[in-house]
Length: 239
Image (cartoon, rainbow, N blue to C red; front, side, top):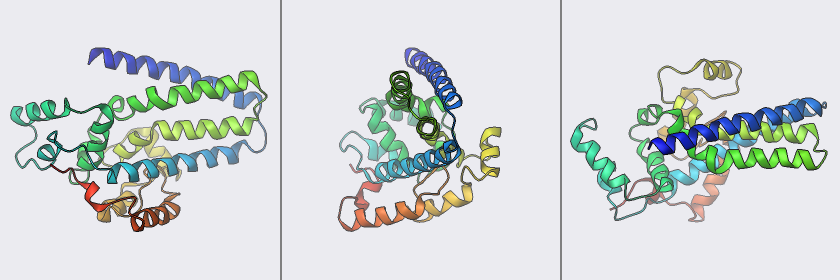
């Protein structure tokens, strides 16, 4: 675990440096379209959060490894017995399957997601997607005269996508960090009340950043459900 946390911390530091370089490219090549590109990137990040949320909610968990036993556990979840069971079962699946399970597990227990640390919520995203993406954008800027608006769109998409699961977790916490409070006041992040619409049905409003893309995503979800691409039985782990 210590090695994993060290790897995540190093990836965070590298991403911060890479993102700062992206901001430098935006300043150097600033044009009138940059503010609009930032909003467009933030919208795309919101849509990405909803598409991933939709997929994870309805993707069936791996059967036969005990995830259903863990999900439907009826006793208290802060006992040594439960924690030992949880560790034993989760050791049988990889990081991706754990993430799929976490999405489903937070439906009946929403506050569980809010208790996750930032490292756990977005560490894998940083390593697998965000850091490589930022390096690719900076590489493109070194090689070609990429317009400032294009880098701005990529920067907003990167920021919103990287912290999407952190923003999601903040929707299930009573107290949130000051940056989240500020972004909510500015209308750049959604409120817990808006996200409650999703938990009321699990059939709408999948976006977890701003909710701007929900009207489009709701139509996409309806179409995928009608075509059988998404199935209701995927919402809970099966034995």
